[in-house]
Length: 199
Image (tube, rainbow, N blue to C red; front, side):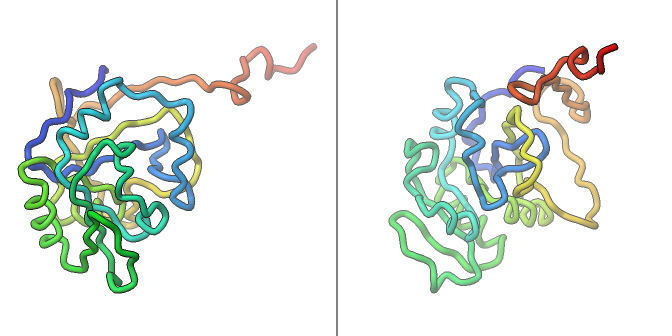
């Protein structure tokens, strides 16, 4: 299966992440260094999201780990940033950032209004899960990276919850499985001949 069609600016609530093959969007303490090497993206991908994103929404944990509103898409994107928090009074003020403490439907209304017809990107696993449960996510847009992290912050963590069925966007059967095939690289790679004991 090839890459998806480019994202468009349609005033959508877009849950957007790069995710490891085993389902993590960040390391244990919101570490993102695993994305810095060994991963490549389509050459025009960043520009695509810079053009189609009108506002971004994140959570307080992610904000406290990376309090740099000017660095979305490497600093190429400029727009309204919203951070949802239970305690806006102790948040460090930042230019272009609004700290919100209201219900999720109101957060989406505010974010879409600020996006001005472009997409509101949700950059929080927790908020994304809650919006999904409320029926407020229009699309989930994932870039699956060829790496296994083994631990960290999952895209979707809902123990005891019911499975959420999804339809794949694009041509073909929307319920079909996406097939990928990878080989280990570097020190993890050993041929079958190397692992079989000698005579």
